[in-house]
Structure formats: structure tokens, C-alpha cells
Length: 357
Image (cartoon, rainbow, N blue to C red; front, top):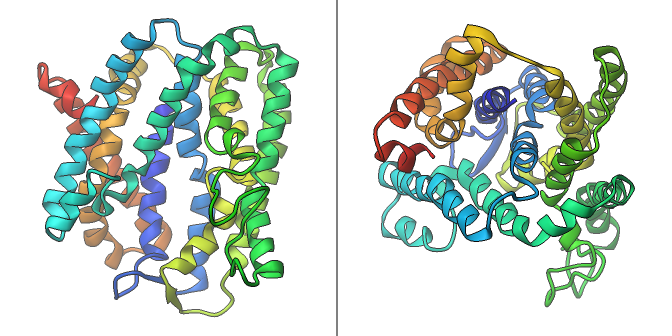
């Protein structure tokens, strides 16, 4: 699952230049409806990638089976140190000066936008020791209740759009505040049960309570879940633009991505469906030992490295290939190169773990 999720991350990043690739900086640009179609297909298939990583971490680590101090020390070495190293490298190679270095003290660098994932994951790690005693005792029914509350919060991206459309008037302007949020309070009623914590709860449910199903029963549940989720994601995204070529400020892409936000309903449903299917896979033998497992163990390093490779590959391939092939070939080449690089770096004594986790 981690191997597939890593490839899906690179596929999404290979599609993004087709709608975030204007000739000027900070411009959203889509050349044609053909491009829009393949961007939509890519997002519907691959958007579950980041939630799958979060679910996999929860499935393997939560509730904790070791003391909090030991857990944090191990996460610091395997996650935080490589993040800092690669954030600095992205600034060194793509940064615009001293301000880029200064931002590293406050957030992930603009030059490595994909690194947003790591602080989010660290946030889940911070929560795990607090919630572990509860996770060990929670019943299936109670856990399902919390998951359903969280699923309700995945509608919030759409509710925010509705608020901004119908009630965007002074004194709050068009800022979509919900359930207690306001200019002086960003923590509404559902703040603490929304976001990626839901994927942590899903990982826990699959670990402790998911029923054993055969392939037929799994597909009977997973297929409609995925179809409904993909429809919720794809239809609003595809219909957002009606005239091509389309150019707008970069902020327009944020609105366009409402239906494919990682913590929106469609993405959540496709993630659950994908996790069910991946959980049925049972690989073994030479291919697993020599290919799948080494790539899986290097997947974090691949995530950190791949944008160095992907941007160069895309620049070489995209002018000469139709959109779907450009996306697929860029992702495939980036995946192959970054996997080899990460596996080799991981094998460097001592330093390898500090670079690739």
C-alpha cells in the first residue's frame, strides 16, 4: 500500500503542472478540456494517497506499544531529521534568498510545497500517546460513532463554500466561519474531531475491528464506496471550468480543489475503499522481498526526494507527449529514479537513516 501510495503522490504531482502551470508565477492555467479531463481522472484515482499514508501509520503504530519517550525519539530520528535536511536542500537549490531560510523556522519551505505532509504527520504522532489509553479500550460501536462524526466534518469544505456564497457579508466579509469560528477564534466546535485525525481513527478501526471478508464481499462494499467518492470528487472539479483556455489567479485553484481536499467526503470514501482492497493483498516470494519491501521501507525518503527529480523529468517529457502519457511517464520515471536513489541512500551507514528515515 505504501508503494502504491507513493506512486500515486508522484502521479498527482505530475498532473499539477497542467493546471498550476501558467507562464507567469502564481497563475492557475488549464489549456484545454482534454487536459481538464485527465487532471480529473488522475485526482479521482490517486487523491487517496496521502490519507492512505496516514491510515498506514495509525494501523502500524496506534495504540502505542512502547513508552512515549522512546516513541518520540524514534519518530524524531526517522521523520523530523530527514524533513529538516530536505527542507534545507530545497531552499538551497530553489530558494530566493535569505527570506526563504528565515521561513524554515516557522513552516515548511515554499520551494518544497509537498513537505506540508510531514508537519501534519508529526501532529498525529503528538496525539497518539494521549489517545492510546482510550484506543486500547474503545469498543467497535463507540469508535464507529466517532468516525461518523468525523465523516460529517468532511462536508465542511462544501459548507464553507455555501457560507461564502450565501452569507458573505460584513462584518466578516466572505470568510466562511463555521460553528463557533470567528476572527478571534479559529477553533470551532468540531475542530478537534476534524482533519487527518479521522484517518488515524480509521486505521485503528481496521486494525482492531474490521471484519474478515473474502474478495467478493470486499469488492461489493469497496466498489460502490469508491464510485460514490469519485463522483463527489470528480464532477464538481471537472465542471468548475467551462471555457478554455482558462487562466486565473493561483487562489482560484484552492477553490477549484474544494471537492478534492484530502479531508473532504469524496476523498474519505475512496480512501476507505482503497484501504479495504489493499488489505486483501498478500504478497510474498522473491518479488516482495527484493522489490516491494525495499521500496516500501524507502518510501519516506522517496517522498522527500522526488520533487528534485520530477520537475526535471516533466520539463523534458511534457512538451513531446499528450497529457495522459506525460502524466504517466513523468510519474513512472520519477518513481523509478527516486526509489533507486532512496534505497541507495538508506544503505549508507548511520547517515542513511538521517537522510531518508
